[in-house]
Image 1 (tube, rainbow, N blue to C red):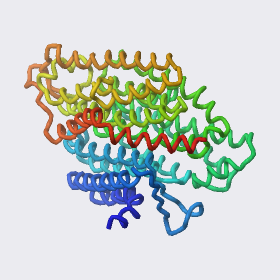
Image 2: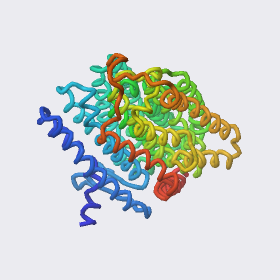
Image 3: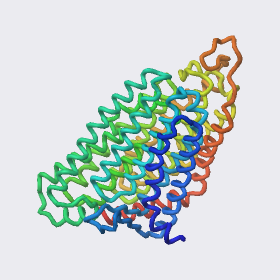
Image 4: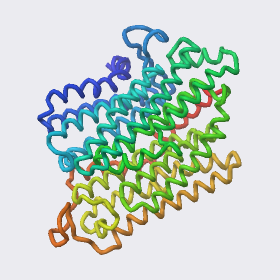
Length: 507
């Protein structure tokens, strides 16, 4: 049974949500039934992802051939430790988001659109899972577009609550389409030069080609720019703040935890496993492009968060800074930097999903997310704000949290190469995180309560705590942020295996 599951799990983890989405659309009138089906499918997908992670923890690589055609002729799903970890992050974020979603979606969306939300949610999840699993470059583009198109729709569904969600979705669509076009042009150049789309075969054929091919330089440049747009790497980040701020709360939880991280995975896969650092402009790209843009993004994102007045926008800008941390470790071009990036990526998914779930709990009780309307909310929603505080401490990098482990490893990797300036930037941006997190904490705990409920005048009944079904996934994510700061075997162990394999592949 175990071997049979191992044989088909690489396909099942993606096909379960992908095939369930159209079935949910057929029964779209029963929103609760669609939610329950989506939750069950996400649970099964998460179990498959956990199984694949366990199977690859010894360095094993699983290969699944569609239609019985072996690669490079057929499409291959190839699961190593890096793809298995990404599958776990996406499937876990999807599961937590759906646990949180039922009451949140019922409050924020009209009944006629709730089922559509879950259909798009499953399509987005299946697309992100497909990017992590596939070993075919064009197949990766297809899955990126499935996830992106579904994400545009998820964000636009927030237009019933705030019309700014429509413009946010449109901006994301334009930028995402440009990124996808750049990416597929790069894939076309690779196919024209090598005659293959299988990424393992691509790597072998690229290194057999003469050095100095302009078409291959162009392919690498197009792919890097296209994926940088999907990541929201500075200065290509302008679509992200509004997309996260005005999307439905459950959509923000999922997208903030998984979407950009999968694009980071795709970029790392191409830079190290396909091109290799000794090919074309690989090493120069990391040192001359990714390192400075990552550091500038960290600073700009943090400054923007400090001066934002909308709670969701604060942590949307914060995501730009945190993505800079992840890209910083990759740009260091070292085994230690890669390990730090993947540890940080894993722990950030937990902390940021918990923060946006806490903000979603607040949105459940009141329409406004302005800081001035959050005064004293900790007195009305103590459990929500306690979980928020725990997750925020991880985001800052407080000891005994997962965020601390990631930042410590990043600083250690920078200092190991003598990059004192980078270490100072990491420390300074962490202090800036204290400032924007403190603005929310101060408003919630130290300001006099406003006594307002969702859309109600100040004289009406005060706000109440969020429902248990929303608090449960919030506290799971918050406590896991602490747990993985104490027991680091999973994130650090997986990151060590990933760093070793990427270092070997990049040579």
